[in-house]
Length: 157
Length: 157
Image 1 (cartoon, rainbow over the protein chains, first blue to last red):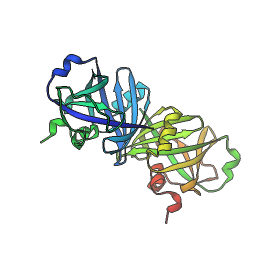
Image 2: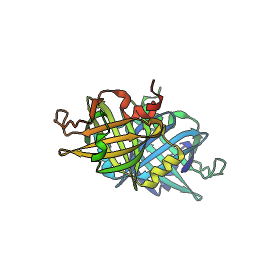
Image 3: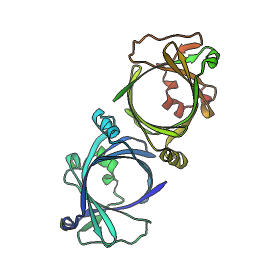
Image 4: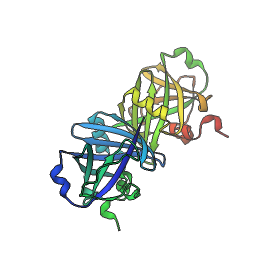
């Protein structure tokens, strides 16, 4: 089983855009969830992934993922057989000093929201802090993807 | 998307055992669920299947399934990354007059429970009623597999 350890930040500026290595469009839906586990389906390019995540402890959580046939994902999306709102975003990969920031630019119900994520091998791993990196929001539950599916950014306030 | 239409019965006797064509051991867990959808993982032999089911309407429900790597299923089971109790059973396939009854003999927390299921192309499709077939329980919510994961047979009463 993998453990996902992830720090999340807002962006202080758009300066990261000049360092984008690759951008990937994706749609994520939650097939179901309980307080203890979430089942997420991600459709991107010609691939689809199913991810089971456990409850979050600090900035870590158990995560087990498998590739699934794109046709399976498309059937689920067409049938609307999922909970909450789909989360639609473009993920920009931005390498900085041996780390890769994943900068998620959300669309549709979460349009206007841009978040940088950094996966780390341990909770105390030091990491670069480029000028464009804004406030850390790792502990803010509103920015969790499940929360964005439930209460999208455009409905805040 | 498939639609599962299924009738469920108790057994009036053990006479079906002489007609078993094949028996398959399986473990099922629910990865997560909401009132509107369930995500079930089934591990059997050298295969594993992930099934997303919608809410039940009468004896029908939407169902979309895909095969997943057995190693993915084993990781989930080892990590305990699922909700409720695992449902452990042996499924016996019993052909009768062009139909195949799936007779589920439950074990562990549901030991003692035996249920015959019959998938039908339509809700009003006629089907054979061999002598060993007992009362129909299609509408009894206690026998749903999710219910058996939540309130196992050995804990009834």
